[in-house]
Image (cartoon, rainbow, N blue to C red; front, side, top):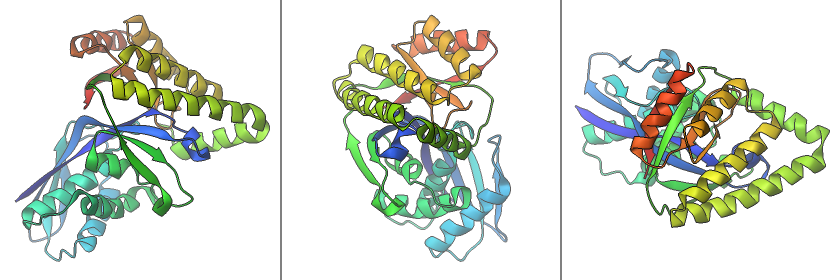
Length: 300
């Protein structure tokens, strides 16, 4: 039997603007997907994680097995504490965990870059032409600056320093909105007011540059302020809806240092920065009090 793990991710700064040449900063979170593989008569997949899509997942398993030249059949089991919604990179975490489980099963000493490469093949089952950011974060963790290229091969990832661990809350709107729909809306905004859109891109670039320094020095106060500024830009783009705003208002009311949409928006999830784990618990309580779910995670 082989076992592997892959972690989820959040976007701290730069979602949507990254499509137009502005860097984004992504980070791995402590929540992850755990996969166990065991040789079997036929290929099968089971999961206790709510929301997985068996057909897509089975296709991903086949793509990864093909990339690793595995001919035997396996029973693949997914567990872990990473939700499958809200742009947290759950499919990539699964692909990384599965690759590592097969490597464990066959005693393969695969470097992380090879694991990342194989996991990317599995991601194609879920996203067709994935950006590569999710599987990269699921493989390496930490924090990275991401610059989108004209194609996935031209994407640039650069590890950046984290001065201290970040204690965070993920607020869950319970509303799923396809990222493509949100991207289309932002594109329409750009077409209708290109000058104002460029101003927003320039502001986003400044926030990201300052945010990277705040991450490196562990300046939580500044980091939170910049997250709030980034949220104002996402609001201007129209990707933060009423439910996102309710969670953010509740979190800030409970003393959160910063709060913003993470990922595509239109619902999904919000990333909230707490002072420490105890404070995160207080924020979670405040969010649940207004009818939304939330959970604690750590970026380290």
